[in-house]
Image 1 (cartoon, rainbow, N blue to C red):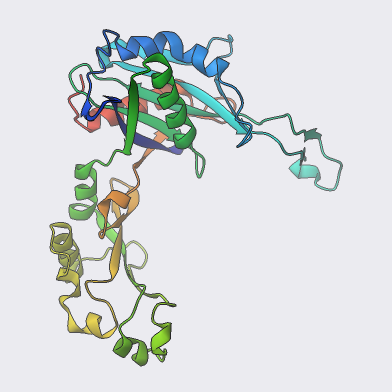
Image 2 (tube, rainbow, N blue to C red):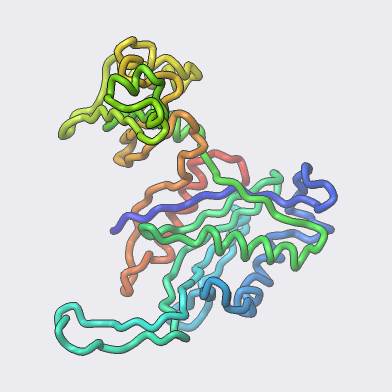
Length: 320
């Protein structure tokens, strides 16, 4: 098995004349969006032209029998599939890493694209006016920008009076678990601007106060975790007492006060996340999973589909 991340996005549909009102996706002008997606999304992607500006192409992934990776789960009102995407426009050599001194095995030409597959899930509830999209990430690679662009264009093409809004899905309970139940690995304080008196203590001229960043990192060694009063203060901050951590005069002398930012790296259920307590909405909507790999080294479709559905169930959204 191998670790992957799932990125989760909220979405809802609005009429262009009433952008503050979410419409029922069960019946957009009498049409159920999930049926529309299931019957038309493949052709839409197949017909979508290459993005000449960004030199990117998108297509559906195919099974060994040439059938498209695209399924519908009516019980949970979701469609799942594999989107493949890659960039073109540059000539690059491919080498055999065991024979680096030899000539390239072959050359990727400007009209070639190395396609990377990514799993997706779209849940379109019947009983709520908001759904979620779950997208696979592989390390630094993801498809959020291209997928949301394509899905928005798809809805606007099929329902010309409507548009789609997207936002990161942040499960507040998940954040709370990391703060209240997790083990703290590091606490990082950052001050990007210093008062004149503090700047003087650091040997900086007053005009330099906005040119430097002062950071203090409290880090646990080995398998130890940060506890005691520091942990208690972090939890107080999370419960809307933003100055509680900086009540110590010693922190103030170092230049850390309510104007400083604070980030906590915490481990919960064997997963480590960094939480910016100055803005929990900066908490990236990534959720770590373990998946089986197929014979090409990518995520096995059935394995990642099961993990995505289980994650959606864990959110307790009452979508179905």
